[in-house]
Amino acid sequence: MFKIDLSQENKDLSNQLYLDDLKRVIKTNTSKPTHTPKKFVDCFWLYWDGLTTYELYIYINNSWKKTVLS
Image 1 (cartoon, rainbow, N blue to C red):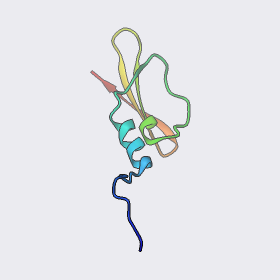
Image 2: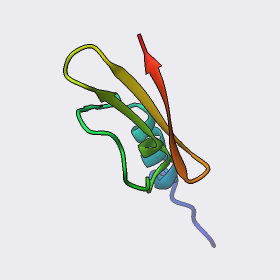
Image 3: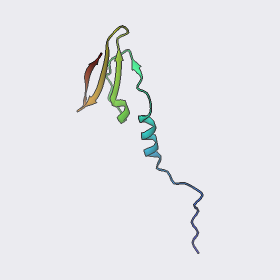
Image 4: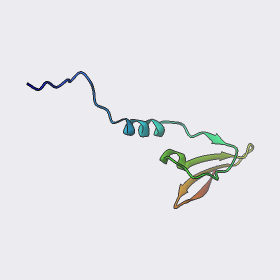
C-alpha cells in the first residue's frame, strides 16, 4: 500500500524568492547605475543627487532609461 505524507507542505521556493524581492523598498542610491541587472527587481534604480534631484532608472532593452521625479 502506498502512503502519502500530507504533513509536509510543498512550496515552490523560486516563486517565493521572487515575491520576497518585490516586497522590498527600493534603496536610494547616490550613484547612477552602470551595471547589468541579474534579477528583475534590480532593473529599478532610484538615484538622489544629495540635494533636490531624484531620478528613477529602469533597465529596458539592455540600457538604463531615466525619468526625473519631482
